[in-house]
Amino acid sequence: MMKRNIISLVLTLSFFIVNSYGQLPSITYDSMQREWRPYDAEKIDEYKSDPDFDYGNRPVPAQSLWDRFLAWLNTIIGRAIYMGTTTPIGKILIYVLIGAIIIYALLKLFKVDIRKAFFSTSDSGVLAHEIHHENIHQMDFEHLIKEAINKNEFKQAIRLIYLFALKHLADQHMIQWQPGKTNHDYLEELKEEKIKNGFSSLSFYFEYAWYGDFTISKDLFSDIHVLFESWKKELPE
Amino acid sequence: MENDELFKSRVDLSALKQSVDSIKQEIGKVIVGQDKMIDLLIVSILADGHVLLEGVPGVAKTLTAKLISKVIDADFSRIQFTPDLMPSDVLGTSVFNLKSSEFTFKRGPIFSNILLIDEINRAPAKTQSALFEVMEERQVTVDGKTYTMDEPYLVVATQNPIEQEGTYRLPEAQLDRFLFKIEVNYPNLDEEILILKGHHERRKKEELSRIDIVLTRDQIKDYRAKVHELHVDENLMQYIAKIVHETRNSPNLYLGASPRASIAILQSAKAFAGVQGRDFINPEDIKFVAKPVLRHRVILTPEKEMEGQSVDDIIDQTIEKIEIPR
Image (cartoon, rainbow over all chains, first blue to last red):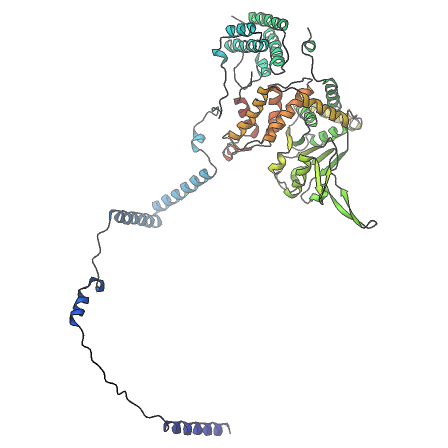
């Protein structure tokens, strides 16, 4: 049944196709007059001689010095990589180079000065600002104390007496003079009882006069001056 | 002639000196040695500053903090910092009151005169930051309302430098709010023997209960006002400024100290002078307080850390470079 239906459909379609060919329109031809234009030989020769239309291979210019250097470098690196990947010595060298780069990067990252690891550097560097105003070893104390007494500047005179006492102790190597040491530090360095007691009293008067800003009378200053002179006599010659 | 007659004190510090001696006597009933720590704790009370006690376990950090609270007639509370502690556990929280149908603020343990924070580095930064306002401004702002703390207000915190697991480094902003970081070290041999004797005779428990109150709130206010009046020579102010300034220029320090550190040195040097009954400060006072004031405020450079140098070494070197004004 199915087969019969397909055959009848094919026959019907064939009939319509054959019938439609019979109804095609007739072909018409163009009847216009045509003008034939000849080529301009001169123009063609002109184009041929124009270098803009020359698509042939041009000669390559000679390499510059820089290009040759780059090419040489390229060859060297190429050979090194080739050696590094093929020979045992080359491999070792490559690892050493990578290790050195990593160590250098770490040192830079942590700001480590490698020289300090091998050579000791004294860290008693100079401060950013000037701190030393006076040098007790260059001061003329006798003269300065007299001057302060004459001007009735007893606080200043006590200060000078105290600095003079420090100079004596430093000269006798009884203390290690250092700008950052306190009066108590110097006191601790003294061994001899008499000198220690006298210096302790001088420190006391100096601190109350200088840091405590207490008024120093002429009489009190005279007592302190006498104390200093007698203390000085206790020092070894 | 007696020295006291020669230079009569311009500020009456006799009562202060007496109170300090009494505090030392009371604490000495329980604590053996640790004189420097006790001196610095007393100075911090007078200088109105908070204290961070750092030491290995078993060196009486917490006990000392408890004793300080016992000798002062003031409110005391304690918080054990843990990793799961929330800011509201410290500050307090608003609770809905069913009767009045409104929220009422329930105050946290931070509302006290003396606050002991045990193992402060065990709480995370979120909880640490809850302390910023109260430590600096002595006030707490919760739900838009500001609560002012009663005077005196002192935070005594402890931390262990060795155990790192489960701990958090304190934020710089918080560290700067502590007046001192006091390092509590092991006792020496003689002190250790005395501790053993005390323990053997079971004196510790009895004496802890017999600690007397020797300082009232009003006395603290009065002493603080007196300390404030002490004379400071201008050269010594320059000396303090130079020390702090030098920490900022030191090639060994990654972070220098802040101006708050300068003020802290000045204030605590005055308190230390007052404790000794002297009405002016000297370089000795400054050097005594400089290290506990600076050690938690500066940070070493990585290279100095790798060299094994400590912050204390670098601070010592920095201070020693600066000339004592004479």
